[in-house]
Length: 360
Image (cartoon, rainbow, N blue to C red; front, side, top):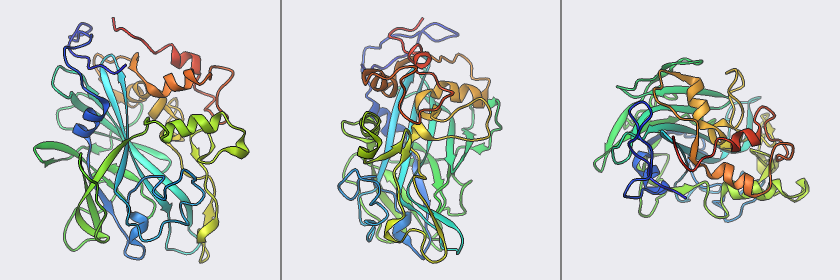
């Protein structure tokens, strides 16, 4: 059950249900970023963001093949997890192709990279952003806005969050590189800054109808927000595939990893094509960041932030709202019976022990 939690005890915070409700969709829209997408003129459509089922099916081994002209509605996925002190909001950006234009380089079908922000529940209408962690291929990068109390923890802080006012809302700015689509806070992943002489697209969130780029050089495209937890969506398909024999799975090759093959020309022209190479948030990992593990972006974001940052203040790792864990538990998974490919460093029963209905 979703609820807005505001002021209380514990280091200046008192926790408990407020008199008014705030839905995950409302929270995600308020904090949704203005997104700068660098594009490459040799294949503009492969740099357009869209939905993983843009071709009207959940089969991920035909997404490279069906890319076409790229005229699909712009889409950004989101997920909200609530602890006793913070909201953790993930934004994920999908491309049908992670592609290359250099011989001997590697490309692969499907690409999903993103960012997660920690938002302190400080009594204000939507809370205050304190930090961001982004996915840049197999590495994570961390950023803070001006005024954040966060300092470096086990990882360094890689830069400052920038903001842009959009329809009266001060929005974070994110940016993805062309082709490989690594993501960081703007402007750290690309030299695309929106100048008229550059190739790139600037995406803005909308509650109305999403649009498509007019070209690879478009400065105002509207994207829709789609909940990762919606019925029949990305996470429901992950649960469903985890309950099936592997041969019957259609979206995921294993836990947190999309199915992807070499059909449709992937790897042509003396390039190579990787299979099953893209990951969902519960499969994202930085392989050299120590004791922070694969999938914490989704399954234990409070630990991820507590590990990456210092001076986090009153910071709870108990979860009031955590649809990833509740769906896993409801599907019958537990320690000793986890989905195939589930990270060995994460123990489901321990994670379930972090769920709570009240905050002390």
